[in-house]
Length: 359
Image (tube, rainbow, N blue to C red):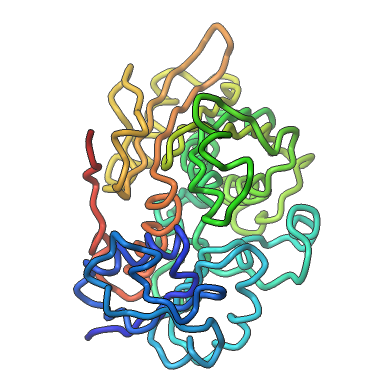
């Protein structure tokens, strides 16, 4: 069976990456691409690297244009997906790459985003440990999928095995992320101009203000065996606290997240490493590197792969996890397509690769 696909926000970075992956997918046909201000223009004018899709023209993003497809991907700014998802009730599968359907807590949505709250959908991070199993199991047969925030899924994947196994204390998590500006989208912003980014590193959303913080808390809460899926909206004063500092660096793609948490009392070095090995030893797209090795963002560019290195700092009594992803692939579009494959019963890795692009 060939599934018909529409992609909204097709002139942006996330939409373009979804299209790049789907263009090589044998089970889908990209029939419709949409945009707002760029509607009416050739797709190739905005995505000149997508030569195989040069025949497509950007249409206006409306529920009527998006309707009638087997699958709709929404790659829109946060807060804009809900107006379309409400009108796509007859679409068999909708995948939202925005934040509108990620959070379970109304209070968290109001605090970090604002605007209308929309019901949470199945979270699109298949490898994430959740209450004794994996998020993958919840994606089987799903009809509504919320693709993750790139920073959020990177940190959650980094620490969830330790939370699930009880070998780290999630009440004092500290994470610092080096991130590329493509994660901020394609809109023109002064702080993202080359002259502002090249040759410098700039922290932003410092002091607990970044929108991905509640998404991380929600994912880590779901990994705790004692709380399970009912703790999706766990508050920071109920056991999971995180200090989250992103730093904009001059690389167009990529995230390098260094996340640390205290070692749980009594946890041995062997038990700590075994938690991550058990979580990801059989996974294709999340790989734990051998002891003493740590990833580079260069090794995951273009790949649907999260590479992570684990260190145990006994002097500081903390576990250190360093994870590298391509924010546009494993962080967003790759996770969306991987989740789509699972939902439809297709081979999970269809159209996705573990091989990066080098140099």
